[in-house]
Image (cartoon, rainbow, N blue to C red; front, side, top):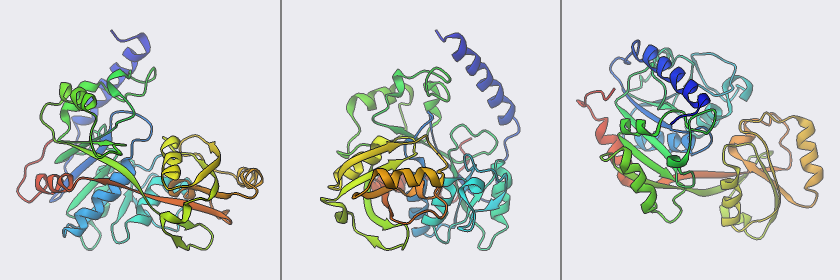
Length: 332
């Protein structure tokens, strides 16, 4: 039985979903793929969106990403550019735009209006990726991809504000494809998969993992291979949903982590905070995430960022391509 706070949240969720779903619109002449999750916090949505957008483009699709841009003040719709700051665009849209040259990333609270904005571009997109869209009811899509994290047992969680669930776990049944991140051994844990099958017996399930791809000097832009970290003593800091995964990536790359500061997700760094980090890290290499760099402004001297990409099975991309091929009917 739900507690009082969970029940209040659930009733609000149901009302909001019913109201917005009744007005849901479909983007003309385009396929829409939603990537989202059940919970708040980091599970790897942005890296998965980037990986999917790249693979679709490599297969000849004209792709655009539609995003709300969490904590970005700009209401949109607007095409995200490098000239924008995180305060306006949000850190994740800026990172996606940097990682996806030639693929329009359009920010807008109204994702339908953002899609129409993208459709006015040349070349006109034919496939949209709806970032963080599993609970976005205003835009119809052809495929829902649900992202879960293997180290976050959703089946033990509770609804907001008591837990981190955005909606009941039974809603997993809407997913057409399920991806489980943080499967470093390339396999979904059997007990985790069993819990998924309780709520969604049919969607294909694919493991995913994070792989360091390089290190960048944030001042000069010079890039190094991941092996550059081996044996280096580092001071790390991060303001992301799952900072422990960043720390583990550094350790996996061979770095010796001598200090680690955690900040809140999407934290906007002040110059004074960066100076405190520099003083604390005297004699150590200072490193953070690519997402955090988007929130540092111009104060980047002496800082490095670890580049990480999400990897998964080729079958995942083949499935997404097939389910959104020409002639397929919309899913919702």
